[in-house]
Amino acid sequence: MFGIMNGEELITYAGVCVQTNLYHKRHLYVFDLVSDEKYRSMGYGKMMLEYLDDYAKMCMCKNIVLSSNVEREKAHEFYENHGFERKSFIFLKPVS
Image 1 (cartoon, rainbow, N blue to C red):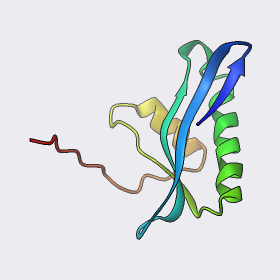
Image 2: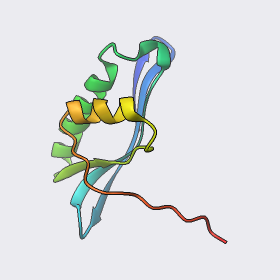
Image 3: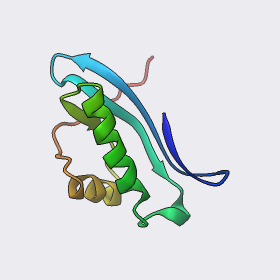
């Protein structure tokens, strides 16, 4: 996990792990990318994505992969503006 701090205050957080599977090969999976609301649109998310890109290269990953809730259209626009492409749907089934 990585964070951008302002003193003692966490501004932006990214939870990541390196994974390997048949579809994405070796990739960096971002399971959390969150900026504090009062710091959004100030460049911290972009800064974190740039850091994650460097980290993925260092880890010899082919891609950075993430998922985003279908309702988070501002987040989707942010990701697309930073080079991400919509590639798949994620399906969820509660365990019965």
